[in-house]
Image (cartoon, rainbow, N blue to C red; front, side, top):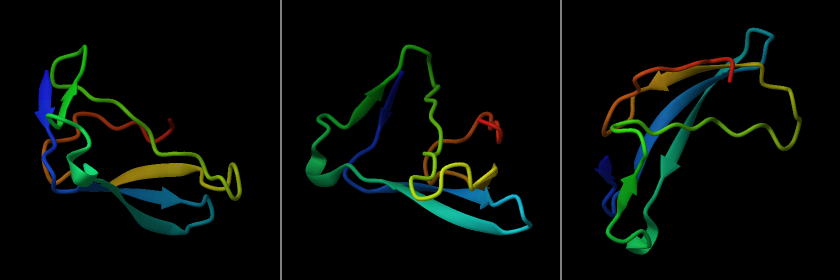
Length: 85
């Protein structure tokens, strides 16, 4: 399958939980800077599915214990979300 990113940045939010009742929304922005990806397409081996995960904390590994989807992507959709991975 193919998804066209174009030159405009796309974003989504992830809700990060510290395990002590603290929740913080984090916006993840994906930018195709200067159209470096030409022709700005993402090809996957599974039709209409792109997978990924939030990065682990580099400052305090293990501090964040849970994730939740804060807002949907500006283009496309989230078909499933596993907050434990």
